Length: 219
Image (cartoon, rainbow, N blue to C red; front, side, top):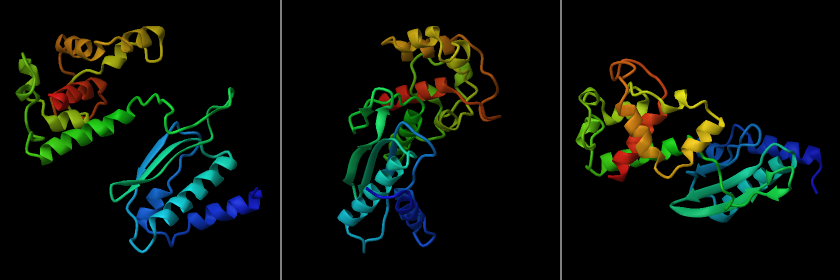
């Protein structure tokens, strides 16, 4: 078992400024008990894949021993998974260990994947970021016609956020969010409301916008 000094020396070595950007991204860690991290790394070809995975695993294991990390990690290089492992506990009180299969309350982490999916469709020529969302929605409201795909992604659509009326974290909130038809209900409720502002005029975080974006991606 390493001493605290060994652990701190290892952390300093891995945080060395001599590492390039790709290596730093691969060794990125959370400040305190993130539920999970998923890292896509780009690393120099002169390093072997096994050595990269070994270094990352050693680093995260050390951080875990120091009490500075707990989570599930996925690291990929050249479209191949080189490290998939859980560290620490998913539930500290019950001593339930983290595994790659540990279920996560991912919440808004899903937004980055929704936006990425929209960009993939754009790159595939199936949509344009400047397209009106009404091009992809049936019975679209006239006030939504100026709203573009890009507005949804950038939180500049003006479409009201459904969470504001649900008391985030309350029983009312969880009761609503666990219903199977919640996404369609969110959109239907949004259709009854005016825009908060002219599309593109300002930034305002909108979960509703990303629900709509997810429906467009699905279609």
